[in-house]
Length: 380
Image (tube, rainbow, N blue to C red; front, side, top):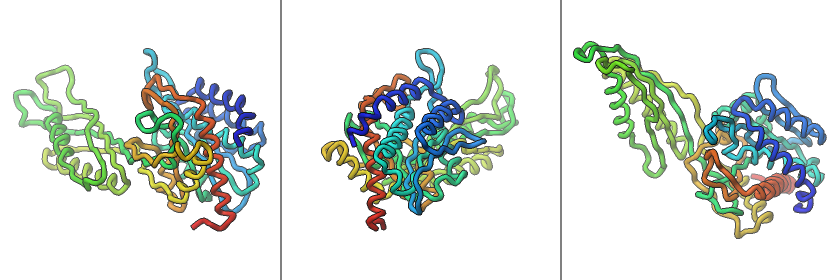
């Protein structure tokens, strides 16, 4: 398999360079979609795009059993050297390149006749809404096994190491408003002080107590009230809340507690408090069969000494919505150590690009391992 990868290297290098230097933010991956569509159609793949959103799905082979590979496409919008711009500081350029590489490798190996394959190029992972859009479009309804990949920072994996599952936590981002009446600084009894209400919100959220065996946090991350007039008591304020939990069950409990706090404070102070979820991602629920297929692929590709145990991370990934919304899907995500530093989402993030080829081999072998188990009747 490594010899086939070598023959693909010029193409893979070209794909990565193009994607790296042409980043696009969430839901605006138009040129990225066009580039990948043309690239893959020229190589004989059937590509499905969508009229109302970016992203695409590539199907190959046929049969009742379907294995899919998903990659994210979007870049972040951040300041780089004093200029705000789209920037692939989360590694999605590498993820797309690995997905393309795995497709081309499977094609070279004449493996696409083994069954039904799907390759999902998903937009808007950074918004936490891209996977939900693909689910809405029913692109995974017929998928039995689903695999993904994400580069891991040096804080989690050393260069050349790999893990067969990334155990992301759940995350939810809320915005809210306190809606009351302004008052004169000399007559506070005639209004409601949104700043004091905000302080109560912060203190009450510190008093949330859930299962201590499951990591979780709840905090106010933005609060704005008042203006230039220092003798006016502001009755209105806007704020943001960041919720994190390592399991979906605890995230549901955390959300319920936060909502109850807001409702109680609204009644106590006689104001209206609104909460709106602007983004959320589910916690990982990795499947043990899928993990075993990927673990075998890692050992066969880079050696058992480079296989590490799944990493529990507080970061989030909307990949896990696929299994949460479609429980029949068995899924896991490859974590690839690649000397990624200073860290994910850093504007100057860099990594060892040679690890892209390890990722291609591992993903392709994982897919083949899954089909082999299906052919032998070994799946549960």
